[in-house]
Length: 305
Image (cartoon, rainbow, N blue to C red; front, side, top):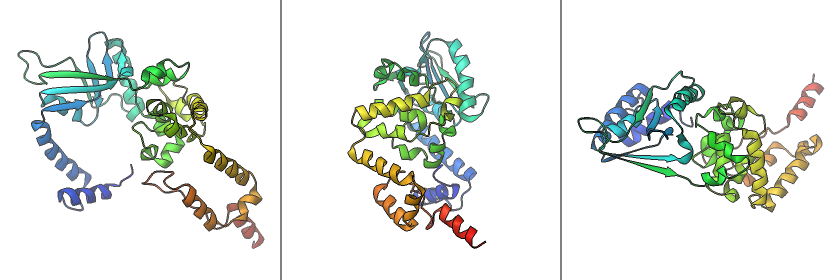
């Protein structure tokens, strides 16, 4: 997470005048009491859906907080917004996928709250919405379905396992991607949902280590798809001449130790600050170079005994 518990406590103190040294438990109790009023007064509740069951029209929602249940219990209208890839054939399939989602997402045998919505409340029922609307989102998912290989990304169950395994994501965090879906799977699907010109570069944030594919429960070949995205990015003008020139210059410098050692760390840091501004997002900064490279430090240390 990009904020510590102390940072969160300070934010609550600024906006809600809670004690500046509030503990996570105290903040949780405050939020619970504050939001309960909002849930009770809301006229409509909006949720996503983990899965939509085709055989009976049921909606499956899994969570650990209880917000989804609250959003559907009090309001008179329940609005469901989900991508078309969330549709699965039957309840039997749900029984197979739900434990996989929990295990790969949070390491649980099953999530804390697993709810199946069968529609608005019926006559004689006290709880539940009076109306229910389901909005299916395509947003270029059909285009992915028509491809030879990228259709496999639509198998994703959003467990987040690839994010937890990705060495790049661990360093830069989710905000750096500047999009809803981050990590390896986000780098694959975002250019399709938005455009390759602006988001095709996400595929270059990959070392091809293969960890994402290794942990994926539905066996999406993410490294392969990321390589294909690089190809599509070049074909769709995502990498302009500045990118190509910069990469060639970087290759020239970094491929030779003597060239790497010519400049001091301060000059390297200045170059990175000019060319790589906001490269890791607004909330993170690039790591800095030491004044002397490791090899030069080692030579000095060896010489001095």
